[in-house]
Length: 313
Image (cartoon, rainbow, N blue to C red):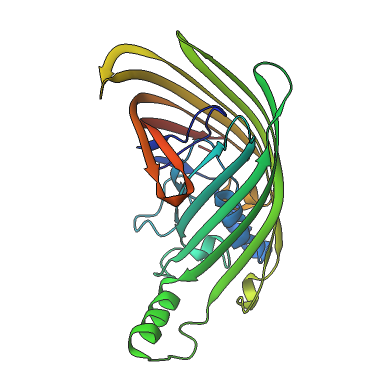
């Protein structure tokens, strides 16, 4: 489950997203992987660290247009998160996103042919942001956001070694010390248009994000380095009543889409420089759900399906 960008006057919305896509990249991308150095794993993390209003779940083949029979060169990536403005009286914008990736490290570190590295690597990332809403006109807002991000990557073998150490106190030299620790800082600038009417709601956001990433701690030598994650994205959503009700409240149709351009190091690894997502679904008003002690209220559930298209499909 995930939540996307929200109208500044509304409480956060809970979304159930059902989407899967496969993107096939040019074989040259994998062949140039050795020259990326530490920017390889950082590029993957950069993709998941940058907040994306239309949350995603992707698979990417970076080896061949035909794909490998054993699926050894497939990236699996996913991101979920939410953002909201606290209130009219306190126009502070808060956001949180989390990402996951599982992939064959050959496309990042060595460019080795299929079948030589049976074990995969796993990335987990999280990004938080705090911003401020500046009203320009009745429907137009400017929103600067400060972002902090963190990520951790480890192989299946390393995770197994850490598990043995934690559960049994068994230390196996060389088995649990292959990992990558990353932190990032940067910011975003958003121009948002919100227009809410009985016949339909319009939400449009143009966002530029720039994160500076670097490894730290006892990160493995081969993956140490720094990278830039830069994106420019346009996101839009239109909602209108279906004429039906559920839970005593209106049910709405939803259409949304986004277009994103990647300027940073993530495009060297992912194999595409731009991507488009488009889809739709249905939205239910569920009333007021209190979440924890922070006073966050969830009042909508949205089911969305999206189609993903990149420039190397």
